[in-house]
Image 1 (cartoon, rainbow, N blue to C red):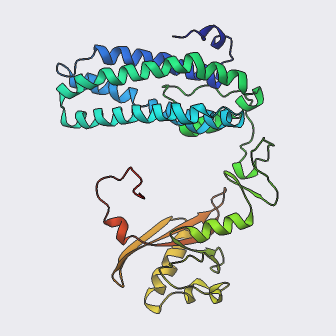
Image 2 (cartoon, helix red, strand yellow; image 1 turned 120 degrees about the horizontal axis):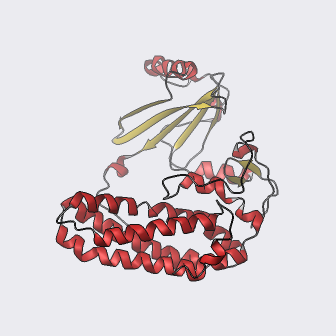
Image 3 (spheres, one colour; image 1 turned 180 degrees about the vertical axis):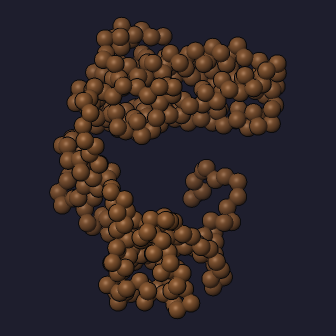
Length: 325
């Protein structure tokens, strides 16, 4: 273990790989404490250590959503397949132990802890011998500098947030929608617009909105309907005539006062969400209104979202396998 440590020690503070190794030290310490803990004699001590170890999910998520995509760009897709499956196996073991923790089934806990401990040790070894050394060889310095914001959104296991990499002098915040830093992408940017997270053509945006299994109506800051999506099975009918119409004329008289109050509260900044659910033609309909505000918290309109949740409400238990066959 840590055969790669001499290289890691030369990395600047906050470098994503250096941070992963700080986490590795914490994980090994927690594994030792977990192995030494006795859930029969002191369940709470064991439980606290176990819960701290389960924050390893943040490490898994950073690798899957941050590191692996960059490796794919360089033609190494193995981690996205094999190591991700390894993560899922460990997640399953953690879930199983969580079930036993809820029951305080100490016999089962003692039986299963070694499998989790050995699985994580094996993962750390693979990271140390293959994943991280190869990552340093494949990724450019400019690519490593792009990690911090995404890593921060997901989080770390460490009790203190790592230093930004590269070290930065305080600068004005740049919203993702205004960040036009050129990055190497695997798809064309022709005829696309830059949204908060990614790029889409107008056609792709239209398709996305059309196929969303939910009805959307957007009313602007002047109380005019400026958009609705045209899905296959709308809960409530809409037609082109609604575009440009004042919202107060788009609802039946009995509900207009309620709609106008929602808009007024949203404009005043006293409320941000309103929701309702009711039976309609034998189906259960869920309606939500959300205030839309810009980066300066200025009111820019309201979005109405309607969804038939009849079948969703009937769901029980779990479904984790595809049943097409």
